[in-house]
Length: 159
Image 1 (cartoon, helix red, strand yellow):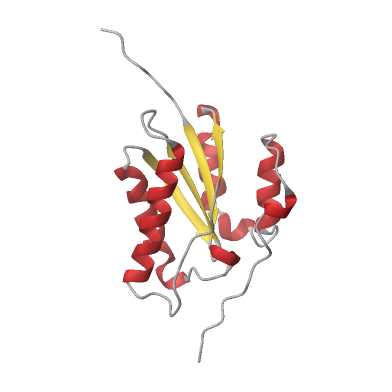
Image 2: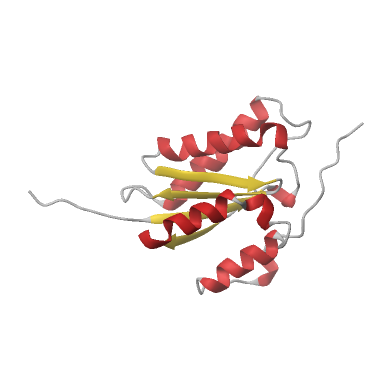
């Protein structure tokens, strides 16, 4: 009996609304695990989820019967709900509208995994905007600069 076989490796990148630095070190690891589990719940296979205070990178195998937009909608909506329901911030947490998504061949899996794993070190040398524009240009994605993410807004606790 014929069957369908696929090999679709996706790196998705999305940012906190207004590029606020609100992902705290105290709960970042839990949030990354929640996002990974939400991606898995769609039938996709998460390899790694990691990020810094203002954005997240997800690397996963895309299940061909689900749209990438649906995977991202579920991961973003349900993870922001998790942050808010757990009272991790004083203000409401939201992800920025949109995301970037890039496909890779099997031979790049180890490189992409290490790249995402080392996000904190990477961002000591390069801003998120530089990284994101670099990805868009590397993959030949046409974009309008006015719709790119703004510079980082530091997180300030309210007294």
